[in-house]
Amino acid sequence: MADSLTEEAATAGSATADEIARYVVTEAVWAPSVHNTQPWRFMADGQQISLYADTDRGLPVADPNGREMMISCGAALFNLRLALRSTGYVPETRVLPDPGQPTLVAKVTWRQRARASEFERWLSSQVHRRRTHRGAFDPEPLPRGTLAALRGSAAAGGTSLRIVADDGGRAILAAAVETAERHLRLDAERVGELARWSPAPGSARSDGVPATSYPAQAERTDPYFPGRDFAHGYGWGLPPLSSARMPRATGVVGLLTSATDRQVDWVNAGQALQRILLTASASGAAVALHSQPTEMPWLRELIRAKLSDNAYPHLVLRIGMVIQAAESVRRDPDEVLFWSPRCAACLEVARG
Ligand SMILES: Cc1cc2nc3c(=O)[nH]c(=O)nc-3n(C[C@H](O)[C@H](O)[C@H](O)COP(=O)(O)O)c2cc1C
Image 1 (cartoon, rainbow, N blue to C red):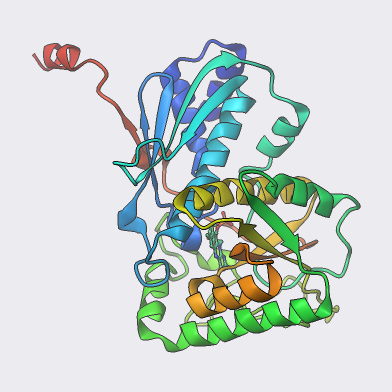
Image 2: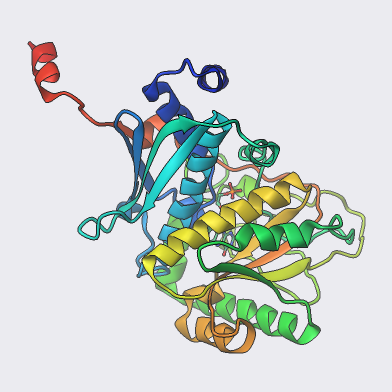
């Protein structure tokens, strides 16, 4: 309630900079992140927020270069900018503004005002509603125009969403996901790392992938894109929605790629990813994400050479229609939002 009051005040132009900062961070934290690690921190200073990557929440085994961490931060940056738009402010964004501070992902300031467009409001309405899907889809096709809208959502900053429509390409991608998943399950270090981010049912943790967000039983599709083993053999997860044996679909398969593979491309890919996910959600579609093959350099290279015209693949996406029951968790914004001491002298006075 407090957050929606803040939004109203912000929209009316009467909210303070601190209230706006708190509101946009409340929205930013609902971004997707690899294993729900939520690898971000925010520093508010007047009408400016700095977004930092929290390297203590990185995945040294699966993501040693921090690419997935930066994609996750990019998704949070997109939410933050969108939240500013929804309050009628125009964000000015500098991505990786200081080469001397590699964990400083972006600085965002807001001064000018302009009404949010209908499209921006449409996307904003999905920030809390969107969930990552895991498993198969209903056979129903995507609403007309959805794929064109999703491709358009990705096309900025050198990022693309490439739809892999031919049976041969889908089979190669499915085989890459399956091969990667098999390797991951046999690698004790990777299994241990994933286990640290997949808490048991009933856990009070507000990060990691909860058992309320994946199916207890793998749903086979043709071709088959296996999900990650979050339950690591304990049978955790959601029961099937219905016992009816309807044919289940793989969905439309795509690849999120960048023309080059620098840190800035990863942040931009994350921004594009979140724009795609919110656009899909607003169209009534859901998206499943597979980063298993892009975590293995040789499989990433194979996908790059065979399916993405040498652009660098980040994620495999499956897009489809489904009624979702998944629930996720987030840390409280107050755990990740810090306030810059604006006036050291005033603080000294306040301390007495
Ligand atoms: C870079 C990145 C990689 C991801 N890889 C996978 C994946 O391989 N399998 C999966 O089920 N989800 C994957 N996800 C989705 C996250 O697990 C999900 O965003 C997180 O658990 C929070 O849940 P939510 O998206 O439903 O809010 C990925 C997300 C990101 C940003």
